[in-house]
Amino acid sequence: MFGRNKVAMLMAEFLGTGVLTLVLLAVQRSTIGIAYFVAIAVGLTVAALTYVFSDISGAHLNPAVTIGSLVTRRVKVLPAVAYIVAQLLGAWAAYGVYTYFVNSSLQQIGGHFTWRVMIAEAVGAFVFTFVWAAAAAQRLSAGVKGAGLTLGVLVASVASIGFINPAIAMGARAWNIWGSMGWGTYAAGPVVGGIVGFGLYELLFADGGWNFWSRPAVVASSSTTSASARPVAKKRTAAKKRK
Image (cartoon, rainbow, N blue to C red; front, side, top):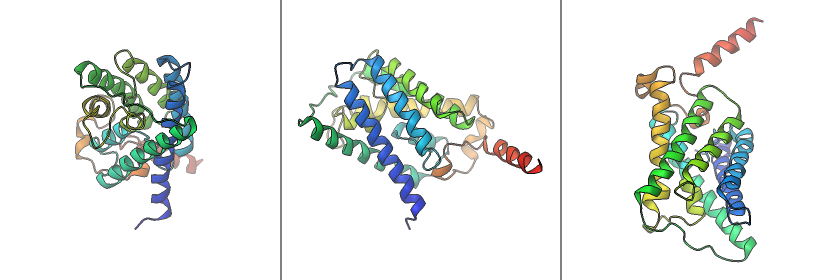
């Protein structure tokens, strides 16, 4: 049921999200923990992790990316659910590692629901996922996704903490699964932004546009390539063979 490839995909999401969460916690809670340095740190981390894991799992590392990919049929339902579970577990493990290192638990920081915070997280996630969708469809470098995350965090941090990632926000104790703390802001906000980011790119800028919902969903390991990009890749492969 679970072959080596499937295990590797889930482990990539688990480790990648864990490392990303650990980096954010280390920088955010340091003496340079201002939005500018946090955004650069997580952007560089995503770029590096994308180079490592993009051919294995697609390097989502963010439930907002996975849900956006699911809505635009870049990934099937069961792999998407498995990805999200692996991401949340990775962030939870990173919290455990960080608190072990600092020998102290973290206080809850989610606070009460406010539309301003939710919209900030949604807009930041929209910026990031729109760039992510474009980079995946056009086969751009991993650095583009990292730059997109940097921009998204900077935008969101104007009015929020600037996680734009429900898994990382959980690892930083901005929300929790068993309570109401932060659910509507640091969990729902990025998901809404991710759906809009992926959906807008597919509708207006990707080949096929309005018909993306009618195409068959692809497997998770192909999530870095949109349906519109695959024919181009095949043509390039055919051209290389002729040479």
